[in-house]
Image 1 (tube, rainbow over the protein chains, first blue to last red):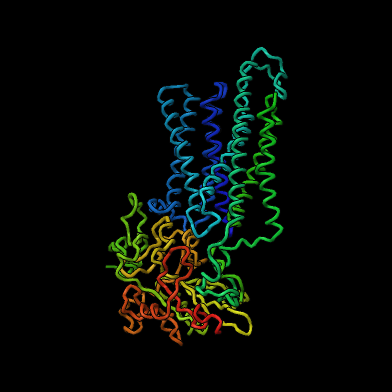
Image 2 (cartoon, rainbow over the protein chains, first blue to last red):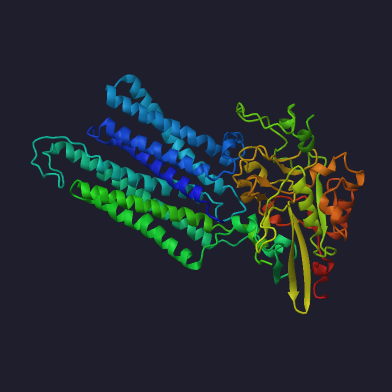
Length: 350
Length: 259
């Protein structure tokens, strides 16, 4: 299949946003109070912004975006239609959540805001999972594209997105260090020149290390699921052959002409057209930037004795950007590796 | 009844707007009433299933069907169809029908098979349920699979779902297009009754293309399928294509070893 850049970017950005949102929810639920509502709100707004950017990218996939509202109508049969409903619903939940956290930051904790935070968090959690499932099933439900037709496809979308987004959350929380001043000496937090309240920073450090450990686990899960997906694909025997495609039960069929000279939708949409070098290098980039580099960096945060310095936090963010590049490679290959049975009819230009 | 609703026979289009008026941009409250696009019918409930039956013994690969199809459909209800760089080195465009050529066997015992390929109007079309807008549908009345060009958002998902590559996203109109079995000829009272058939069928100089109702056991197409062992393409996907191919006699299993 020809990788659709709009979808490659949309799914990567949405995965980042979903993982980041999960990281924010986790820190809200299990982190110390030193992470201020303003910080949590800022990161939730970041997740909303990434979802909006993803939605913007997805629009470029449509020939007629002005009719996109129609795409919500066939939810009973179409996974794409379901995704079209779930994405704005998740955006609404994340928006309400970010707004509620902002209100807490501005006006203090009030019962109404607490209810809003709780409800939007619950809805957001469910909708995050639903969006990953819908996105994955858009591909997973196409039985003709055997490379995609497995529950591993939606699982891979979830695991890879969660890994990337939780790494982003780790980097973002590391950058948003709370400034709790206390009895410590300046320099007790390496790279920071204020006198910290060390009791607070023990908890902050522990929560950040915990988040990094969860991100490591998600990355390992993503590697496992994607590895299983790739292994399954390698062993797949195509159900369709030139014999079933033409209903001619003879070996040795050769195409002499595909009925046109200048190509068609069939020759453009279903072939990736990349050379062997690209197809060799992209999997390496996917593994190196998408899994290996973030694993090393996140393990450093999870096991490190010190709170990450500003320089380390920025380096971690750079690693997450490279990881997103690795995820872009993964998405591109997800399309390029898909073999469509219609390609049996398009083997010879003449 | 509007012209469009006569053409496409769907309840959703039976509203009394002229065919030329743009679709009113009002959001439908919830899902539209289930149109004739229900994918699960099994053919049992549908009394009629129009289809083409193609005789691979007779097709000579002249491309007259391709040309006549393009001529009719580019100037008719579905048109205009893209025709990019028509006189240049790489002419490309939208066609509903293509004729491909294959060689079977080992020289000198080879057969050259010309293979016309268009939408097979599956009884269980995988392209229909995946459509997010309901633009892709199968007519209840006669089983023709169609695209409502006014509802199509051009996402291309249906083309991914079709194992046969029967659908082409038109690069000019940015909507999905496909063989309509010349639905705008079949009930067209402006044409003499003898011409109310798909353009490809009328153009074929060797009568390699038969057209009719494959659910009527007495029809010409049903008899041809029964007598000649009409075959479905890619039966492994259980799409149950309505179009059938009459195999080359020389390539039938029972002709094995005798050339």
